[in-house]
Structure formats: C-alpha cells, structure tokens
Image (cartoon, rainbow, N blue to C red):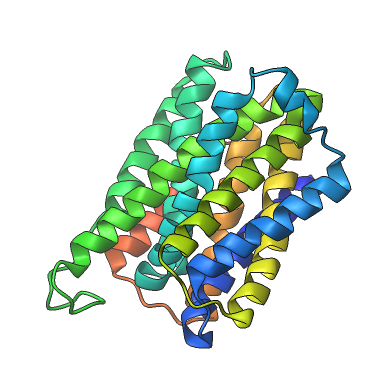
Length: 286
C-alpha cells in the first residue's frame, strides 16, 4: 500500500508546484522540458533500462510514441487548468479520468461489469458534469471573454488526457521487465519534443524555471514509478489501484487547494468533488 501513498503524495505535490509557478516567475513550458531531464536520469540510474531492446524489438514503439506525445501535452494542459480552475477542480477532473481506465478494465483486462461498478460510473458521470458546470460571466472566476468555456475545455482536456495515459501505463505495467526501457524511451521522446518546441519558439531560458523543472521531474518520476509499481503489485485487480489512487488525490487535493490556497469554488463544483469521492468509493473493490 505504500506505493499508492507515495504516488498520491507526488501527484498532489506536482499540482502544488504548478500552482506556485506563476507567482514565482517560473516558465511552465521550460519546467516541463527540464522535468524530463530529471525523470529520464532517475529512470536510467534507478531502474536499469536497456535502450538497445527498443531497437531489437518494435513491439513497444506504438506505446512509446503515444506516451511521448501525450505526456508533455497533457502536462501543459494540466498546468493551465491548475492556474485557471485551481487545484481542487483540476485534481478532481484528473482523477475522474478513472472512468476511461475502468472501461478499459472491462473491455481489455477482463474484469466483469458488476452492478456496483456501473453505479459508480453513473455517479462519476454526474460528478464530471458538476465539476464542468460554470456560473454565468457575472459570477465566473475570470472576467476574460469565454473564460468559462476555456475552463471547461481545460478540465475536459485533463480528464481525457490523463484517462488515456492511465490506460497506456497499465499496458506498460503488463510489459514486465520491459517497463524501465519503455518508460525511459517515453521520457526521452517527451523531452525531445518539449525542447524542440521551446527552440522553435526561441524561448528565453531561465535558471529558475530549469531548477523548478528538475524538482518537478523528481515528483513526476515518483508519481509515475509508484503508480506503475502499484499496478504490478496488484496486477489481478487494476480497479483497486485506479480507485485508491483517484480517491486519495481528490481528497488530498481538496484539502490543500481549499485549506492552503483558499480556493473558492461554486457549490455545484463542490458537489462534483463530493460525488467524485463517492463514485470512487462505490467503485472500490470489496
């Protein structure tokens, strides 16, 4: 169970760092790029990957390419969502991505669709609708034109993006000994794409952003590593990992977002957070 606790802690810490970035003059796109330098280095040092294996077999390349594209893209979406919607709603939307892996668990991993799981999915859909609900412009958190629509789009992007990544990581966990090599390949590809994007934009490099990125990479690696390890430990029950991880992040994210950063959310969104926790509880295996 310690693998899940560590993964939850790292996940929420990533959101906190993204929340603090703007006020500390940290360029998030640079931080995300340098994050993959740290994450890739830790993968190389701690997991003992064998890069030559990727050249000998192309079986993992579709997974590798998908993760390499999704990881930095969804990271950027999450950063913008945390800044605009806050930690509470962003973490809740991220963890309601549980719905997509659950569908995969039924269709790809051989789990049965019980009545409790179907009820949990129905509650989760209601929770997602409540999280995405935006007040009219007079009461919205932002006065910018279409600010409410942008917030909805960001939260939906977080939900869809992390749901897809969760499914890919489950597939990675099934790779067994190939996991370190595939993970390193995903980090390298994600880093190359991120730095290429920055070079094309002719960014002004910042040492503060680079250092923040290295810390972000430490937390990101911890989140991913312990999450995949939990899937390997509980390989016969992926719903356990999906549920425990999601309810833990939603709860801790709510405590920190509302308690530490004083985020104020509409009561409908608050209802969505409560329904999200209830949905995961219903989905938790007994």
